[in-house]
Length: 116
Length: 115
Image (cartoon, rainbow over all chains, first blue to last red; front, side):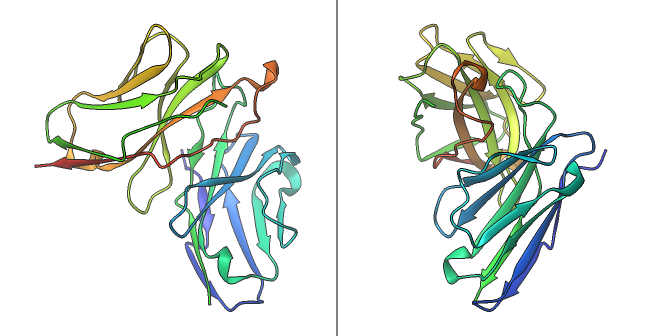
């Protein structure tokens, strides 16, 4: 069974440009999460989709970030315009259930974003 | 969600048991203890979780004290591939007024398994 995949693995862009990250969750997982780790900091939650609906977007840093999950399958995270402080590793995770009793989240390998 | 405290780093000899402690003294009754790890340059990986009973799976064992204020993750026979940062995370049940589905990562414990 394929795991969570993310594309691209690495992106280098200029400040002010736009970048779109893609995440394909494990098939059948309704829950999809975005996290990121910026330089020297801890991994931080960005948002949580249940199917195509945003369940929790409390971690989104500002309106330059837009996440979508049309059709409840793959998700995209767009950063427009990118700023230097957006550099870091963006992780996507998916889970079948959404209860602490059963909420093992499976993470992708991450996309390393470098904004110059 | 309750705050967790973990040692910054630990060393373990290859083949020996690695015991990683976590303090969660403010944990409440509906909060679960989860453990994840992140091997260098990879995404975090789920290891195990529990509420109050000890748990064991193919990767590790989780020992939770009777008062639930602390827990220990045990890797019974550590290998070099177990070198990683280990995160202890406490999560509450959203159905009982708890947080949502997100994981809150702290700094974790950097475990170095040495030959």
